[in-house]
Length: 133
Image (cartoon, rainbow, N blue to C red; front, side, top):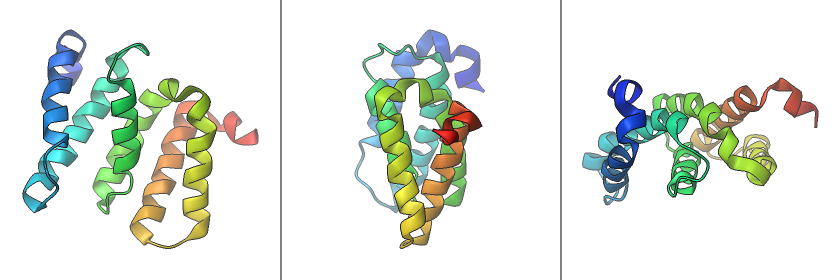
């Protein structure tokens, strides 16, 4: 709600805070904080311009977070993906192919589920017509 209300005005400050949280060492104590930061960064994405210096950081963090075993986090990230599709540009197809091969290749259930959520977010952002390509 804070992000939706004032996110466009203080996006740079918020990104710095969330980036600090995301750069903390991985452990059980920081997991919840990191997941919350990812959620907020996803919400901030709608306010960013393609020229923002943190666009690549945000896109990569969101897509990497799909590998998190938490279904709640994966679902939340997939809802943020339609906001970042416009930043993917020529890498869109590469991301779809990577996720598709993860889903079809099987293996770690959490990664497969995360890739499936990622594909659903991409399809929502791109439109179903994109799948025909």
